Length: 255
Image (cartoon, rainbow, N blue to C red; front, side, top):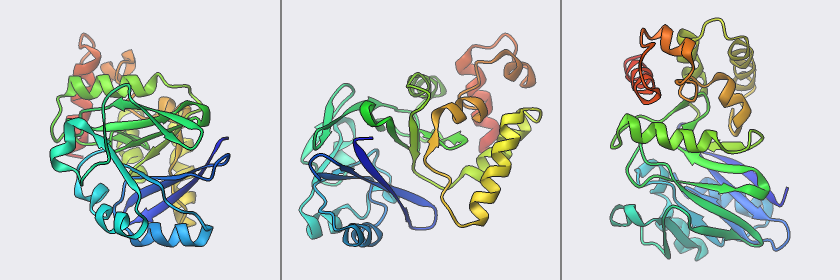
């Protein structure tokens, strides 16, 4: 893999991600819930931070940015649609833009739904997708600003990435997400296996992210809303895929 990856726990249940291009040593960070753990990880590895990629404007993903920029001089990249509520940007991005970490090229995806202007960063050669609060391990983010149709389209685009992609999401919500998933598909053997695996992982104090997209496709109900048996379980056999997704999200919101 052309990139080294470090998952950094932050705040109560957030994650930030350091990625370093092996060919050049250039290093980037995805999201800044807080600066101190990032600075500690950089120091421990002897890395210099060059770039910061922000996925969306929520405080728990950006609030450490100013402190980190002062400490490192890193450039800051974020969504053009969100520029009015992000920290000051070096470069504003939109769907289809490219970003680089050394020699490794990433693509910007508009994944609006959780917020309007939410973006993900997809690095094809490294099989890494940084999805923050859009596609999450076992779930997806609440729809604070977007419609169900918007979020379903965003998730469908992420679901179309290669199945060996690692999904680097923004929170340690996996246990509760899978608990909900089991109410939708109690007979899903892959889901039951994943629940047991996650319980063991968390008991050992280890992060449950990143997760493989193939695992999400097999166990995450929000990527499986189009399946006939999911629609039937919701009593929505004639519903569109987006309508079934909306029903799932509404159930999760009150779970």
